[in-house]
Amino acid sequence: MGKMITNYIGHELQLYGVREMRLAGGKADGMRLLSVKNGKGLAFEVSLDRCGDISLLSLKGDNMGYFSPCGYVSPKYYDNKGDGFLKSFTGGFFTTCGLTAVGTPCTDNGEDLPLHGTISHTPCEAFRYFIQDGALHIELTVRDAALFSHHLVLEREYVCPLDKNEIRMTDRIKNTGPRSTPLEVLYHCNMGYPLLSEHARITVPSSAVAARDEHAKEGMEACLVMEKPQRGYVEKCYYHTLSGKTCVSVYNGDIKKGVRIQYDAESLPYFTEWKLMGEREYVLGLEPGNCLPDGRSAMREKGILEILEPGQERTFQITFEFVEEELC
Image 1 (tube, helix red, strand yellow):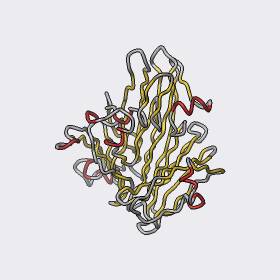
Image 2 (cartoon, one colour; image 1 turned 90 degrees about the vertical axis):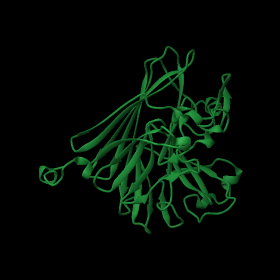
Image 3 (cartoon, one colour; image 1 turned 45 degrees about the vertical axis):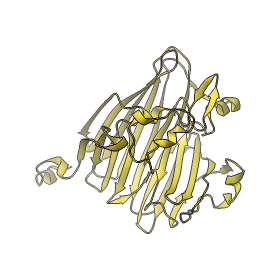
Image 4 (tube, one colour; image 1 turned 90 degrees about the horizontal axis):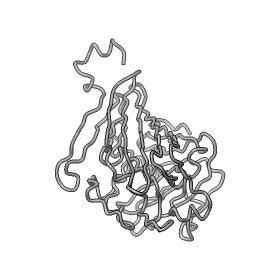
């Protein structure tokens, strides 16, 4: 932000910045949020008690993500048995799934694993934010550990430029313990109305697509075609094969806004499309990950389960670019 512009304002929050907030009432009571705006029309909330994931996000007043019927739910209400995750799945713009389990509940090597792991219900233990080089920076740390089990530390950084509607996210996950540990990560990016509607155009540059099950095979040729909300719609999942530095996107001409999700498919080699066109359950999941959401035991059986050795670290990067014209 140039000096000439800052001469017009008393405090940067007049245009851009980060505010700490705490929710009151209901199941959200006490939850910590960072409310962020970049001065160019991008506004979002970082949920500090839910892995530092991005919950609400809007571009110039238009919502971009999906907010589930649960709303904000404190991690103290988390049910870690089976599908209990769904009782507190806020959705939001994205939810981190992992770090030692993703997808279907299962038992792997004698360990009972819940839907999508536990990291999204784990509070940050440290965070800070600052302005540097013309961008808002947010850094946070989340620990996923248990005695006699895994010791993983997630260090996350968001960089949001003041002159561009973009969020660059970098995750570093380190095994700080003495044991070899399964590593499963999936970024559950959830597109919602008004960005998502039957008029939204979805671009996924896949070389191959596979349906998760027999139900998903029905209408598979139209897997990227969005529909009006339908009562009784049963979710469908599709597995896309992408390669290299890739970009998937959603653009809606009705609101003339869209999002481009850019990442390296070499580090996140699996991409899941979650299509749910139900009434009030209207969401499109665009989900890069290092595994498929079929449960850890299935990944082990297929020989594609990633293992993080003691002291080893993995880095994942995703850039979210918010646009007002269709670019890809």
